[in-house]
Image (cartoon, rainbow, N blue to C red; front, side, top):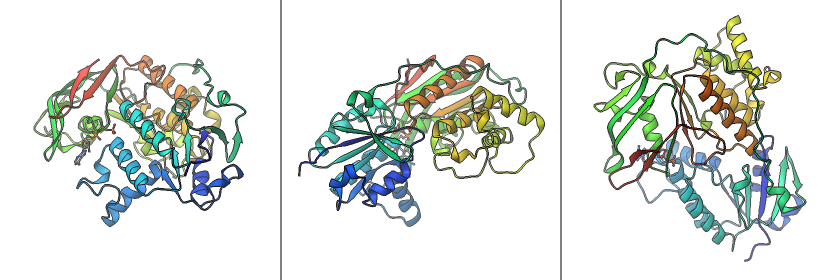
Amino acid sequence: MIPNSHWAIFTDNNSKKGPLIERLMEGKFPEELAFLTNKEGALFSKITLEEFIDEEEKHDRKIITLDTDQRLSTMSSGEQKKALLQYLLHIKPGFLILDNPFDNLDQESQISLRKSLEEVASHTPIIQLLSRKTDLLPFCDISLFLERSQLKPYNTHQEATKTQGQHLVHFKGQIPVPYRSNEQQEPILIQCKNISVSYGDKKILNNINWTIKLGEFWQLKGRNGSGKSTLLSMITGDNHKGYGQELYLFGKRKGSGESVWDIKKNIGYYTPAMTDNFSGLHTSLNMIISGMNDSIGLYLRATENQIALAKEWLLILNLWHLRDVNFAELTRGQQRLIMTARAMVKHPPLLILDEPTAGLDDESATLFIALVNKIAEESKTAIVFVSHRTEPGLKPTYTYELSATPNGSVGHII
Ligand SMILES: Nc1ncnc2c1ncn2[C@@H]1O[C@H](COP(=O)(O)OP(=O)(O)OP(=O)(O)O)[C@@H](O)[C@H]1O
């Protein structure tokens, strides 16, 4: 069958994407998509992946990775996406919904996914939901915009793909001072000396040498599965494979009697998975205050100092008017600014941001990147920013790149 057409639905951070996906999957189509009636769709999305991971973890039922013993949850995000696409194509759906398909994929995998989708498009109608304009698939001939819950047509293709241009972002004033004055910090934060990691016979990291010093701004890059998350888990003290190796975290050798808390107190960490499905009832103001108490949800009466500092952060972010709004009600872009402020309230020696712009629209991503640059300029906090996208405007001082070899990935400084 030759599909009637393929659709691009642009979303921004105010779009009610979840309910739209639900309606489409239930076969409730808007007029424009009525030609899909009675067809069974498949969804290529993080939500679908989470369901398969859940099924495997809770019921020990493997569905999309029958060809390997490795658990889906331990695969890299790129490997998970590839397995999902293969599975979905195998079941030959009547139509395919792609929810930000290129997020978390490395450049080569994006190119190969584009090619596979071109082939799929020759026999299966595709609906692409996208928040970054450069992600548009060229065969999508009809473009709509999801304004909150309403689908609106674009008049022309140019209108759909027009980017706003890099507008300058102005934050009012400097980032606030740390919650408590920091203890004297050694200039060298992290030292990896010839660090190697394997899982069974599978070699992941090979003789990694990487030193992170106070105030440095790093981007960590590498293809899907090259070991970025594994390396981060060594730095955050979460990977037991660090024991017995020459790994120095904040002045102490790993395994020299340090507690996990000794390591964690030095690190601010944010990855979108922490909040994407967050439904707790906390105001924006309290979310920032919770960063001073290192807990979300634990009820502690905020001191006047804490409230004043949280206010300063919200003012800088232009979000003070939303102080009493429930965090879950904010747009994704606003949530990520707040979570970054939360991770920064103490000016930890090290701030790790793991794919922090995934799922953001262009405007929110620009704002987020501007905040990260500002933190790099105005604080002593070292930053490690992990991303596959080349974010326009991001100004890291160094890039550490992992390149796969048969003996595990080796690292280079660029
Ligand atoms: N517990 C485990 N058992 C077996 N293999 C594992 C385990 N954990 C990770 N791996 C493998 O280690 C490799 C590196 O994974 P990692 O998640 O560190 O990559 P990554 O660079 O972060 O990838 P991505 O960009 O796709 O997120 C992958 O091939 C993954 O499948």
